[in-house]
Amino acid sequence: MPESKARKRSTSSTKAATTRPSSSGQLTRKRPPSPPWVGISILVLFGIGIVYLVLYYITGGGVLGQQSLGGWNILIGFAFIVAGFGLLTQWS
Image: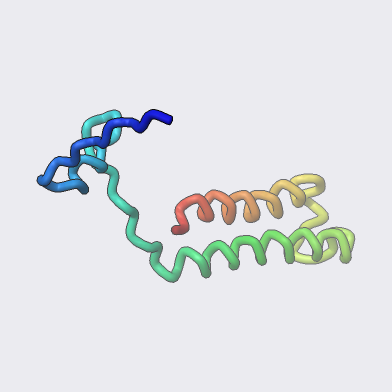
């Protein structure tokens, strides 16, 4: 069976040969970790949204003047949850 020819390796930096810039011509940088308040804020927003929805369904809208808002209560509860998911995209 024939053998393939051995590749010549350059004696210069092998790391420079393997690292390629992105399509825009710049090297990508690793993002620093998020501050601790981001994780806490995510949990607080999720918690507020869930507690708001649970209170609305259990009490029938009798707490916090929820009865006057009608169906908007569901939107308010889910808005807190969606805000938590929005903040979750910034967490690293």
